[in-house]
Image (cartoon, rainbow, N blue to C red; front, side, top):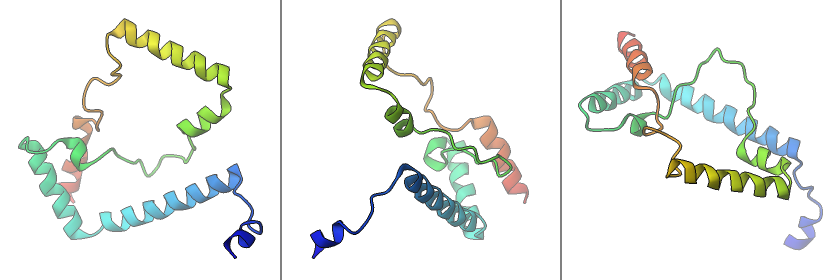
Length: 132
């Protein structure tokens, strides 16, 4: 029965995948917005930030970044979208360039810190949150 059903369902197109991804992201944003307004969640977040200031936690353990609610919704291409548009020869060229960059730098690390959010911006945002 499963195999008979398989032929009756269409595979997703690229546009269909993008539509589903947008719906999932909208749902995640709705949940995050709801949780962000819950008073106990705010209290917990501020307690965690206090632990960061006391150097008991890393900032990246608490938050991954900030979302600007006024930002326009331009969809940036993801790695899968970029990679799917490159040919095999282009992908091989990219790999060779990456290896050359590693040799020049001595390591393959691109980031200087922990890659988390800016501590100054975090201090400002958490200060605003405390004032509310």
